[in-house]
Image 1: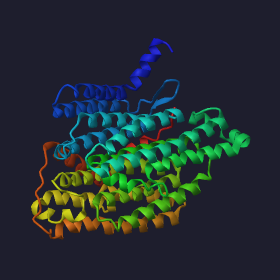
Image 2: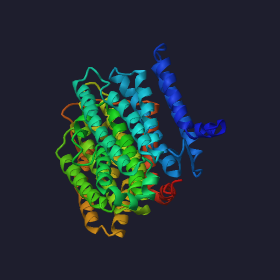
Image 3: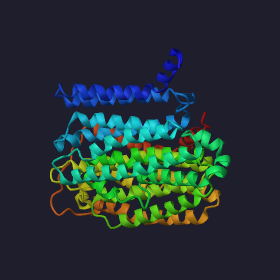
Image 4: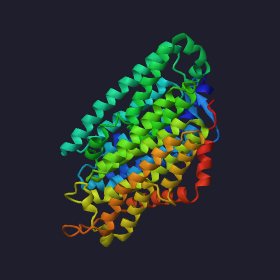
Length: 481
């Protein structure tokens, strides 16, 4: 590799380099400076600069490092989602960390490291690089889950997430090894190009490796029956971290799945039946179990499982239309799910809070605007118009019907109707519930106000003006290099 080529490759990953450099600066300065506000500002600055650099790469597809790193519209789109998720998480976390006495600079460093791992996962067609990105993303998450060391539930959350995450990684790396044994490469493009020949030569190795890789990512996106870690981890982790878990790693897992299935395993028609079964189980289990939850974080945990099922409907349907609808849905999900978690974070910041739905009773009487925003996000999660949740489900279900998956769509619509019950339960508690004692007031900073504003505007913009955003998601499906 000559000097000019190396410079081009470094420019290719300049957003990741900026975010990593910011993480290192915060890690080092945090040990000598006591101003946690400054650390938060430096982290936010690094993420914003990284976002600007990523946006400049739109519609300028390039590859580097011998084709292992890509900057096509697909990777740029998801990188924007990851960085936006980190920014919103940072904004909503500051007050919570102070209130819970866990405001440490390591949180911001871990957040940025994890974001870089997600960006690597979306920006490669090489299975080894995807696995590397997965581990860079996951290891900081294990620490973040258990960072509230004085809370036994947080410790339990970190340990469970680590154990299950290691288990999932072992499936993935074993699957990659089998695929390499079958094809002699870890490059998805070469596997796709030689698929017919590889199937004749080593069909058992090829399909075994593919199923193990799918299993590893099914753990990461919390598809049933690989979902059992989600409720306990979400409940025990600090609330802003739970919000980050529910969007960032899930979007990264689906970005990798979309890349792998659309470009690498496109010749494996048999995987359609696997995705059909996963989609149905994930929707049904997630929605049914969410009904019985009294803890709002556990309810949202099962809700996130159900939403993974809706995205699996798009994967089952296949085709560029279905995949672009899944990309649109993940963007919309980032806004309304993080918006809901922002309000839960505000309520959970109060002394003695244990994240029960009953704690929301009386919210409308004391904070009507906050209750209205909570209702907006719950309506979006349920799929009511004119929110982004409605348009996201509409596009996915339409593509499923267009591709002949009518019964799968019927099951998905029925599950969406079931979800209305537990989302409206939260709204009813906020507006009509009478608290057992005087509602403890909440307070929020300008950072929280910005987080709520961004998520609310995003939820309504994607729902009221879906055409522009759907066009962007379709543009992200340009062929890879």
